[in-house]
Length: 429
Image (cartoon, rainbow, N blue to C red; front, side):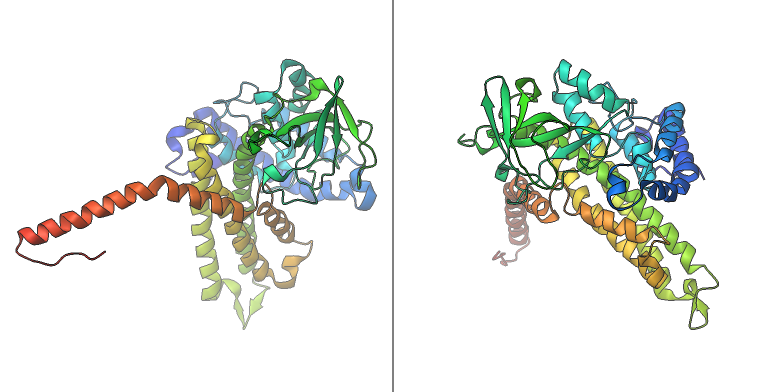
């Protein structure tokens, strides 16, 4: 069965014929080239210090093939960007699910974080010079980038806490502070950092204190592990303008969260595939029976199938909402996906691990790797608790008055009907 024939009915009207053909190409590329290449990539990458100085040959080979197939920059939606491959967020969501089944497929097609989010920032907010210098080589896959927001001494899930100091001095900005979990910074091909800090810490509007600047990776004053000197960058490094950092970051993280969720659906599908394979292995029996003959195991498979399909609909619903408006108009739907999908995937991966026993937590299966990566997503782009609080506050604020009015009317109408029928019972609620 081809990938295009498995498109959920709810999504069918929104998927073009071109996208359906591309979905089949993506599936074949992932299944026949990327998944077999995962182990080669890990072996070529190496361990220890070597992995931070190595660019696996297989990655460059896969990139060339992906370009020839037209599988490149699918993440930049046609609704909001002109630089991408011309697909909608929904169409890319279906593709990203397939890419998520391999550890290298997203990068091989130039759809990998943090570059995706950084390219969106540059495409949406960068000036012409910034786009020419940094966006063009990123779109071509010639360089990689990093995103520096999180700091070790503050709760960075609240972006207003960011403390890295950015002050203007002559024709330069001077940056002083510490960052960690700087995604992408360890890649030897990383050439540019997108750095969030404070240019106006005394502004009464806490959402106008932050700014985002572009810092070339080789800038004097940068060091890994600890900061020894201040960093200086030219004024032209400022993105959009001083005090616009929170706006930029919100615009970046929304699409980034939904991209993570899209790929996570693929990881959950992959775990389910491995679980089904395991329970049908005649050599692996318990109490004289294959695992597939035990009711609890079949229940795991059934629950996993329901959970993957349900999570997929949440993701596609968010993608449609973004396509019809923008990421800001889909905050509720993105938050739902961000919270639900990783939790769902972790549950499914855990079942798959359990079906393999000790083998499930070793390198002989991809399950331990999948679990670690998806578990990180419950922290990345903001912890679940923050999104749940915001989602709950937004849901309560937007509905409380309408619900109160509706229930009041229903009680009064019920009392009226009772009275008209000769009853004297009234609601005390």
